[in-house]
Amino acid sequence: MSRTGQLISRFKFEFVGRVAAIVSSGLLMVVLARLLGPDEYGLLFLAVAIFGVLGVFSKLGISNSCARYVAEYKEQDSTQIPHILRVALAFNLVTIVVVCLAVLLGHHKLAGVLDEPALVPFLLVGVLYLAFESLSALARGVLQGYEEIELAAAVHAIGRVTRLVFAVGFVVIGFGALGALVGYILSVVVSSLLGLWFVYRRLYRVLEVAPAIEAGLRRRIGEYTVPLTATSTANVIDKRIDTVLVGFFLTPVAVSYYVVSKQIVEFLETPVSALGFTLSPSFGAQKADGNVNQAARIYEAALTHSLLLYVPAAAGIVLVAEPTIELVFGDDYGGATPVLQVLSMYVVLQSITKLTSNALDFLGRARARAIVKGMTAALNVCLNVLLIPRIGVVGAAIATVVSYSLYTGSNLVIIHQEFGLRIGLLVRRIATIVGVTLTMTILLVPANGHVDGWLSLAAVVSLGVIVWTALSVVTGLIDLNQLRMSV
Image (cartoon, rainbow, N blue to C red; front, side, top):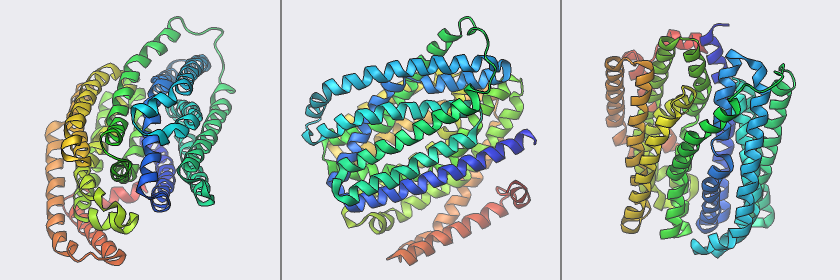
């Protein structure tokens, strides 16, 4: 099978896995919102956001560093891979023990700082979540680096499906938001153990092992975690600290509005997340083999098709945000509408960074990305602190979009330095995509005013898809013959 054929096959597996995961997550999001109500729902996801921040220190970029060196030595000397795995696991166990002990000793104080005493049991139980979620990330990173995308997809999908079953089950039998968190914990236990088993069976047990680890390799793995940790820290600040700050300045209800909006964005990210996860290790392998031009053409095609999907999707979000939130989550969550409309721009930005950011790590540009991410994350925190007290939860959304715009632009500059992208061609394609989006939006605005239920909402969305497809084919953005060959 050709390299392109392999990538398409891997993408299909990862995409199917992510679809299963995101459908499960979507159902979980809606069911929990309905069963718990805004207060408990906001409290649960405030705790999850805190674990996301603490998880930076239990991971320290170890999984991504391991993945990078697994991808590199897969091409150069696979006998070093078992040594890489042992080093990464040892590093990760040390960080897990340190962080979990710190949380056990300080969970009361942390809840006090946030002025949310109801968080205490969540933080105590969440120690298990931190430990197993870190191991799950390590296993999935290793599988990605070795380009075992099918197994990585299975780990992700099974983790999310079991989360739906366990979390909803515990809530239904009466354990509330804390029961939902226990369901989250059981799901990461399943995914981490399954992922580590796959790593053991498909890599560690079958690969030949060099008599000793290559001189300096242990140090390089450790050193490369530094910029990756900086990036992941900044990434968590972008994705989690805003939720924590909303909880600090406002209320759990406001947290629920913000979380609901961000979860809808995450739901929409599924295709490009799968594509970025699939392509990233391939870019590193192509660079190692000297095929930079081929990698650049693959990236350009992926970027164009992602924007073709997500720019119109963002416009659609602005149009149907209010009826969608009220129909799916209920009238109690109507306050999330303006937040989601602001975050529609974030959808477009994510469609670019999901393709680009992880690829830079595999291309050896983690340090440059870390510097940019740190600066924009600091800006995000400052904007959140400035805007949330003044304009409420919408301020957090504005802060996210502004800071992430700068980060996205910087990612594009860095990858252009690596690949030498055809800027003129990309600009022409993006201009055409914007034209398609504007035409679609103008045609949908009159129909959008008549949305009053599920049937009319589905009709408007369907009309948008039909118009988008027709215009994309006419303008040549979608090649039907090529699409048939890829399916």
